[in-house]
Amino acid sequence: MDICSVPVPERSSSTKKNRGASGSAKSTPAASKTPQAITIAVSSRTLFNMADERAIYESDGLECYVKYQQDHENEPLKKGLAFSLMKALETVNCRLHELYPGSEELFDIVLMTNNHAQVGVRLINSINHYGLSIERFCMTGGTSPINYLKAYNTNLYLSSDPVKVAKALSEGIAAATMYHLDKDAQLSEQQLRVAFDGDSFVQQENCEKNMKSYALSDLARDHERKPASQGPLVGFLEALGKLQRKFYAKNERMDCPIRVYLIIAKGGSAAGLKALKTIRAWGLDVDEAFILSGLPKTSLLDKIRPHIYFDEQTLQPSSTATVTQHKTR
Image (cartoon, rainbow, N blue to C red; front, side, top):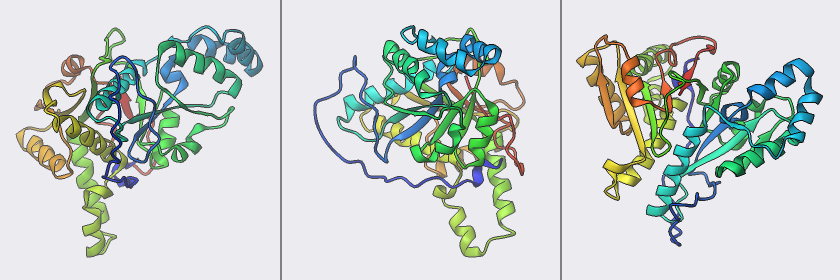
């Protein structure tokens, strides 16, 4: 799937000012429901480890699965792959509320699941048990939740199911498959870390421009070169950059809870320079850049430990959505 060819929903650059009491560092602010929010939809099996429950469904069927969930609805589910990511997102929201009371530019989390509503009682109880600030839910009772992503104004969809991720991408929504590069790695809950492969990012941008040049008029080509016309991945990173700059404006650059990494694995200095200039032209803000010139990325990624890593397979041009998509730690 050529993710860079998918348009990004436009967002207002203005932030409604509503100065009130500053949010406490110990309390997580309520999820924002404004157009300025960055909405991340996460699947229940990504937020929680539901392997045991899934085994019951596969061996005994749906009714036994639902009954088990109801019988154990007061027992919290185990933490899943996306748990540290959710805590990091909440840290960003808390810090933003401290610096900008009433700010509407926040992360907004939606729990997206094809579970039935009766199972939702255990999901909500588990969320409350861990103190997560999730107030928006989509429980589709066995049907695909992908059909509802746009209704929730989703900017990024996270799932453990690569088929669902591929479907979301085909619908024009940035999506990521969750997995652990190192299952023993402890990811930060105090800083959101996003890394992406600069080689593929710039390569795909060039590929898209070349393909479009055969079909578009000069006027249309000029329009397509604008940053706002880039794909959902760029839109997501641009939104991150806006939040970063809110911290920079308060002299919090060195203590910013959002950090973006650029990794140039295959190319040398020329590729690195091109990637940095391209990203800067889009208004994105990369904190750390690594030009490896052929060195392996594994050790670097183990050091960075990103929550989200958009790898080299993410932006390969294809007529159909590939199963391997963005990967999240």
